[in-house]
Amino acid sequence: MDISVVAAGREDDSPIEEPLRVAVLADRLGYREVWAGEGATWDSFVLAAAIGAATEQAVLTAGPVPVNVRDPLTIVRGAASTAALTGRPVGVALGTSSKRVVEGVHGRPRTRPAATLAESAAAARALMDSVPGEPIVPGSTFLRRLPPPGGTVTVAAFGERAVAAAVEHSDRMLLDIVSPEQVRMLRARMLAAAEKAGCTPPRLAAWLPAAVDPEPESLRQVLRSVVGYLAVPGYSDMFVDAGLAEIVELAAKGADPETLLRALPRRPRAR
Image (cartoon, rainbow, N blue to C red; front, top):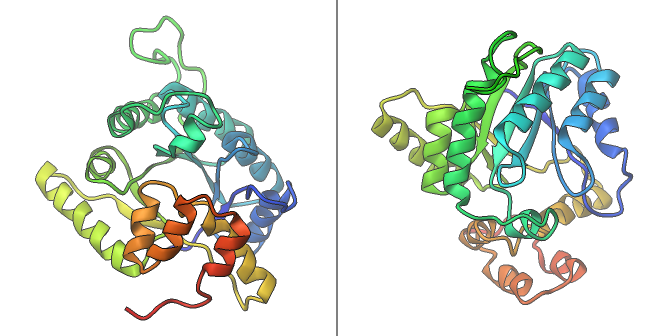
């Protein structure tokens, strides 16, 4: 098992430059990969380029980026540009994101998310392997000038169609904020999809908030990063399955983050 570090800007009162500090520390401690997460504050490719300039050895992965907001060429071009500037392999992670991000932040319609994810993953997979001198996209008169970014393609997946897209077009399938039971269930779904498609299953990756020897402030920071997902479709179902139905209901009714923080258990519930 490999352990990597996610350097993502949290949408709270944390310092804006915190992701860069996290990445520099992770690189110094010998972590082999740093993910440059994307949100309302940071563009993942700009952040990845800054991380590459400030670190020495970590491989970079940008995203997950929402496929209803960025087209496949934009995604792969961002990775190739970052790789050219940093001299590091750069991978891309794709996801459907949520309605509140795609429509509420970007002002784009979040239509056909599963189909768009599959289409984008297939196109990005092909573009990641193209070389200088080839058309930048099939049929274009513009030629590729940058070398391929050299990194992996990761697809964030929960639902069956997203899992199928990850199996068919990615090197890794990403799970975000999941319980051990949910990991087992989703891994089984991935293996079944791979068997049905007659292909080798991708590796499995999981994003999990963690703190080493946490103080109360650390625990609060971890929990604060979770509460924003409580009312998001897909995530809310997983929290219900994990025994947090009452808190999910509070979030659905519009409870503020402080109320949700107070309601969250400080240790896992027995099931």
